[in-house]
Image (cartoon, rainbow, N blue to C red; front, side, top):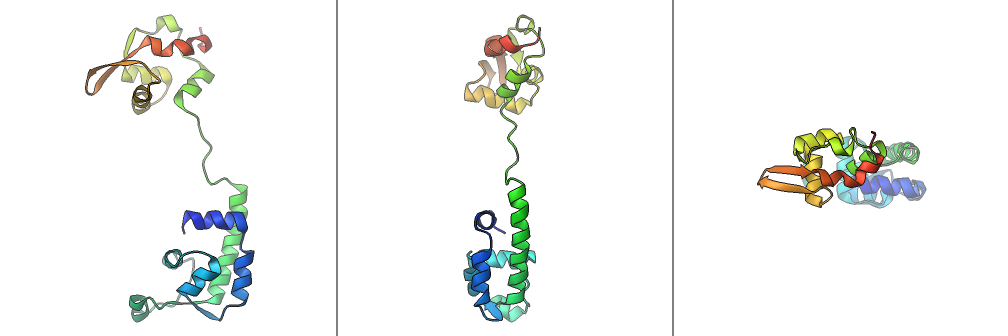
Length: 172
């Protein structure tokens, strides 16, 4: 199912689709199902492939794309969408954001006093100090949040001055 389709169901519900389905015949073509649901034919095709919509299959019909979907199957799918809508209204579509590494360090503070941090650190040492991955440290270097010197194309040394703004909240 397309994410946009779920978002539309989440916003509008299935009332208008149920109203259109009441006027529809017993068997619907893919185009008619798309009109009833308010989505594209490719979304209907995907829902059939996923098994959310039941359509009798025959090789000739699949090749010519003349699938017919019983209206009862569409009615069951709309019931499923209503239950999904209730779930989606309860739970957000995206996971809660953890925040970036520097925000977390500002909240928790550095694990050691600023003066005890070496003047130059490897990316791995900085990752241990910030309690994050090496890739996160490299992203912070490339975005300009950490000051570092490039030794070779793949080697960096992080300067202690990078953590100057974080020293006020560090645990001593």
